[in-house]
Length: 112
Image (cartoon, rainbow, N blue to C red; front, side, top):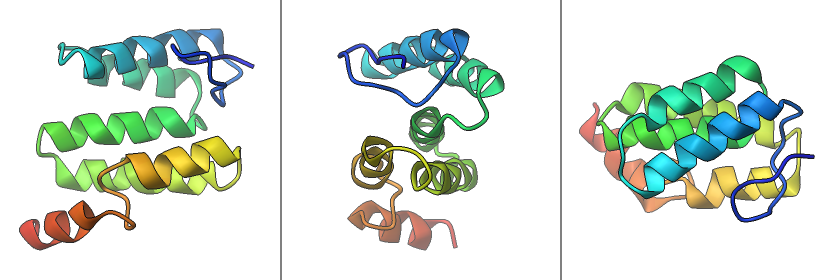
């Protein structure tokens, strides 16, 4: 199994997807451009890569793309429920668009 930058397992069987995911996450954390494109590459390689979807949702949120962010977050939650406990926890608790987050209500209100 592949690992993220911190040695934690990630749910992809694709080396290319794992490399692109790590690149995208590094770009998010450093506030550098190209995170969305890197995560899109990861998702092209592995369409069932739950944490890549939640990371991509975060990039959409950063750019104020609420509809796309919610769609990617929903896909991540759906996939995470079928994979590992870590993916499920990541998609629920770390993502600001999770229905478990107070930000969900604010975003919903602002996009109506």
